[in-house]
Length: 128
Image 1 (cartoon, one colour):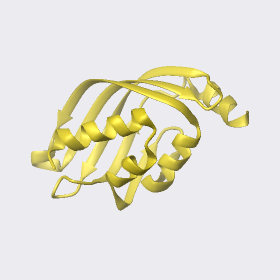
Image 2 (cartoon, rainbow, N blue to C red):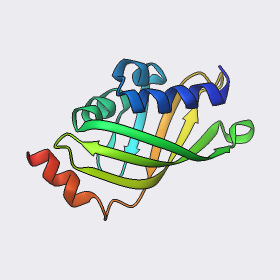
Image 3 (spheres, rainbow, N blue to C red):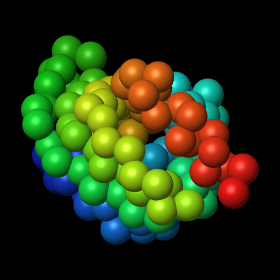
């Protein structure tokens, strides 16, 4: 699978809230490291994320491709996240993916963004 294809499928599935599609892009043992959720298996991370989400909208800003040397790719995007309680937060983030050798599955995702502006809204939405 072409790297741009798996990345486009990822963002589309995130925007659509398609849990099965997102999970299909990750290997069974893949981990996600998230500033808000900590380190979890991708299977569990996305179940929790989608439970906490009413709507997602991403706008891709940049792609950083290092697959030839490290099997890694990073997506820099603006994320409009509507929480389950309908509170919206918007921020820029970078998702750094590690891929398997055939580039058809993500094996790890590290999510990078500043949680300070949204942590209170996130915590409040989980109490609702």
